[in-house]
Amino acid sequence: MKKMNCNIIRDILPLYLDDVVSDETKQMVEEHLQSCASCRMEASSMKKDVILPASKTQRLAEAKVIKGIRNKIFRKKVIISAVTAAAVLAAAAGVYALMTLPRSVIPYEESGASVSRVSLGDSGDEYLYCSMDTSEAAGSICHEPVTVQTEAGEKTVVILYEYSTVWSRYVAPLFGKENEAVTLESLGSADEIDEVYYGTFEPVSEFYEDPSSVLDKAELIWSARAE
Image 1 (cartoon, one colour):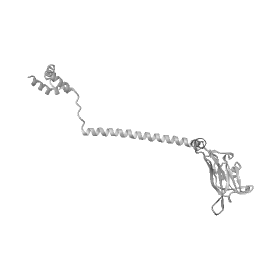
Image 2 (cartoon, one colour):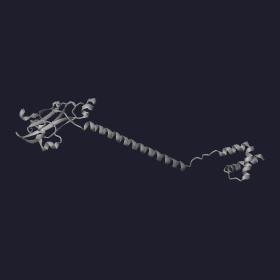
Image 3 (tube, one colour):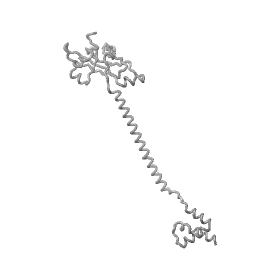
Image 4 (cartoon, helix red, strand yellow):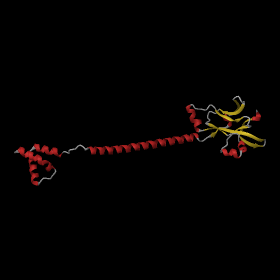
């Protein structure tokens, strides 16, 4: 009789645990559980949460959500990396510009500028070259030959100057990149140029508008009549 009662009780246990039985049945089950250790263990086991395996559709949905989250994180990392790289490049470009764009004219006395005639080819044509040996030089600017009117008459002149930057003065030497010489090739035909000057012409339009005023502030470093 006890076995029958246990079988019946165990069939009723799920309904009892869900609290969908009548009061009489509930009382009967509780009285039986008080006296039957086996059924109490069964009831206790049924109370534990049972985790059912997720369906294939559910697993696919979860995987899709996780993939979407990962993609968002990856895109965010890419954007942050790109913005960071752009900021670093912009900062580096700004620093480099500050070190290379502001130019300081190197005085003629420090430039070591000298003009010489050079014969090219078998034709015997001669051209003027100017070399400068300032180690701090970043470059040089040379104006093309221009004919100007002076008190002594017309003459064709060339004006040039050498300049340095913060980079060429302080940074380049650290890398062993000092300039040994800067050469301006072909200032023009030696037969066409009367004089070569060392001086600035900023802005360039200044030289076109009033060449004489520029030459008055420049240093004459070569003259065809002096040779």
